[in-house]
Length: 284
Image (cartoon, rainbow, N blue to C red):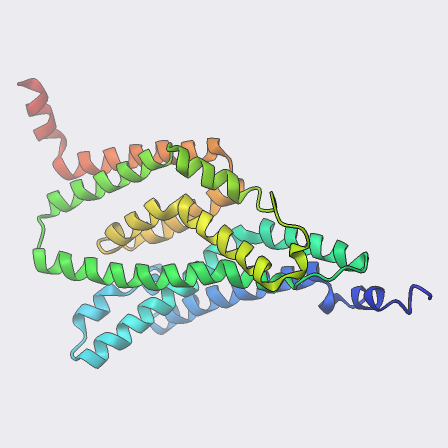
């Protein structure tokens, strides 16, 4: 049989049926869709940097809603914005996973062995982030309601924010955090025989990597829930930090981010308390 008559070879000759082009197209398309949703919401709010940041999460709209239906609609928008942000910010960080899997699948198909589409592993990865986005949106709304009800003094809120940053910074140095980050950079270790042909095994790989990614950054996500309720700029900053850290995926990167978080937490706490009270206390 000639090579051109080989079904596997014929399939690989069509870009839309080859795993690597499918993976790259999916990453690019879904990322653009995520950013497009955020920008559309920003334009709807009047444009500008402030509107874009507000589009990432809108807990205040839930509090200001005149009715239960309005509050639920605002919560739905908040959840949608978190999902869009997760897709836009986190899917590109999974490019090594998706393209790496696609290369393995393409090699298997070229050798005449079956392999599941890379969209399956992407679906598993995104399933984790969609679930987390829903949870975070609900938690941030609850935090916003809690802050509104408690009416914390601005100084105390600043100190709590600094403490949260410091705690997230310390987490960056833990063995669990570093092990998750290393695992993210090596997704194909110890896979069972024939796993490329099993949709369940491939989907499970995506879920496992999604969970490991959450293990890498849950502490920073928790800080987002706290600080995002007070200052939405923090959301954009932490999203960029998490994306960059996963792209590098080394212990040194985690430690650099941890040192930065500790410094930022200290600075925020000092700013909230003020230098004069601190100097007076030290002078006693």
